[in-house]
Image (cartoon, rainbow, N blue to C red; front, side, top):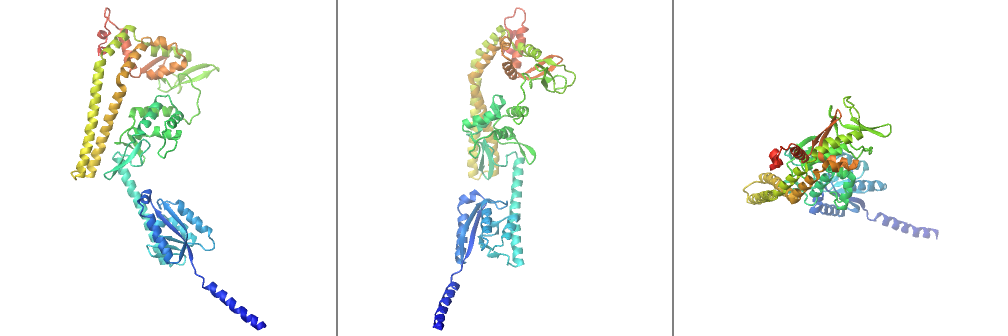
Length: 523
């Protein structure tokens, strides 16, 4: 009985062993596919084609795909998102690490660091299109040839980068911004060439930032707040922070220059602000950097320079309450001036000379209003001329485009002439806008200014100190203090008003026409 029981048990163990040995075998694998850019992804031909190829290969060779990884970025740099996820995924599977299936070498890596990373995993890599298999058991000659392919792939991207840099440097030398368009511009590619053109929605907002900051009415922080209120956002749709505003105000490209490769180039691309406006903004940025703690504000600091050495006139407090001004370089030639005395000097030497005798101001106002028709006629003629120039250059571009399509001119000639004509179109458009903004309101502003200067000094001495400083900022271009005397240099048109005031004071005996004494005003 015992022998019979034992004979029954042996077949069952044999059957179980046979079934286990005949169980189907399979190997785990991961798929990795990559394209270099979003343009290739949108093309719809590369990623799907790679995935189909690798899935078919897995099915034919007994692989079970446990995960798929896709990258849409260049392989010349380390740190690709899905590549790193794949490496982490493989490292976590310590028992049986999956095989990597990839189309070819340059899809997996084009830099030596990633090659070393994959080699350190100790996994098989199947390069399907190349018909190659790389693993720890591969012959040295196979590994050597694979290394050569990696180096060739790296050399390809290095050479491509070198050619791109060479092309960008050449483009910069020709005066064109060679990279991605900064905010306020758009990249436009036509005729095989890429240029930047003003963004119709943001160019005017960029110009407003410069104008508001140059006027001294806004800080960088308040500009950022205003930008948020009007919906002015960055290139990626995010909020314009003060640091981004600062970078915009420091970028010389908007005024016709740009830095590239450590060199300053003159730009031939359209400008968004004038050079004068950009310089004024830089002066204010240099004088009031946001990174400094806010110092105590004295009434007239930053307004005067030393008449002896040209340094700034600074202020300091003596005995805890008396404010004195003197040369910041302490040149020993300029004594201290009390703020009360400086207040008097500015009123007498800057504002009083601007006060035009009432009968002279009335004469100038009458002459200005009498010239209204002539001024408006000239303005209309200039606006019409600007429009004609704009339309002429637009027609030239359209005509040249037709010539290019017909093969009468080549792409390079068309692109060069188109850039030139677009700059002239933009200049004509700017002139038309400026003349339109001026309009009859400019004439009325002139009348209002003349009305004010009839009593400039009398009005000035009624203002508080902060208001006086605002007036001085408007009328002065420069001012020096030397030997207790203030010497002003006026901004336009206050330099002309000073001459008008002098004309009134030099009027010839018995003459009722100021223009007879000072003929420049008869116009």
